[in-house]
Image 1 (cartoon, helix red, strand yellow):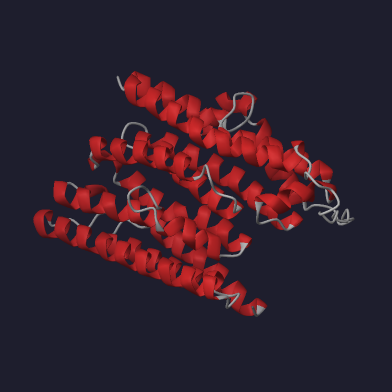
Image 2 (cartoon, helix red, strand yellow; image 1 turned 180 degrees about the vertical axis):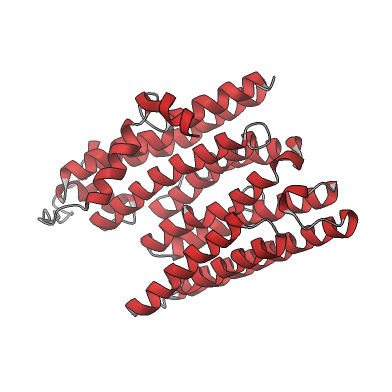
Length: 346
């Protein structure tokens, strides 16, 4: 793609995100979401492969339906209360429609079917944008309207998302699909706590975005898309693969690493809210996704291809990994000890 065109689309993405997260009026928030959708479509379909065109079409249809629902929800609320302010979403029907619209935008169960397909049809860099920055505006809208959302509905969506995200990722061999189901599972953790402690949802999202960005950038550096090619990629940059192992375990939420922090805080908050059964259930369901993270980690560093004669060894690349990957990897692995400071900032 032409670099100038690429720059315009990236700036439009940032503009749409900024408009949505800084607006008070529903129409402005909707405008930002539309700009975002239109800016990401060329980035999804830039390879002109039929799979990429299919992904862009699916993305456009689901996002336009979700945007229409956001508009419908805000209009219903304005009709009943006379308020266009995002924080004044008080009508229960509007709140219900908004929850389903945002669930569709984010890819929460049962509106999750589009997300793995779109991510699989996109390049890794676009997949990174879809998994991180494109999730921010809908989560910001949920954050602003969190006081009037239905806790039972969100808890149900969250537990279903964590269950299906873990379960459906088990038999995947394409890494982008595994990361898509991982995203659905993490969104479940964010949705369950947003009514009780919205700031925890934002903290969880920031840390998730940081760890996912590390993984996508690492995979883009070593040019890996499937589990079978991941097995032979360790010869390219062994040190980077070792750090990828730690980042995957951090994304799974294992204790000494950064990813444990949001899970720990969410379980603690749920227990304070007398929701110990929900906390237990969502913790047990996250063990499903732990399995496929461990499988990815195993393929990354621990296993060797069974028949070395059939596999061509990759040349070790001399190019140094970017400083961005180094910083993100360090933060993805080592932020847990400074969690008290992070909590004072949040």
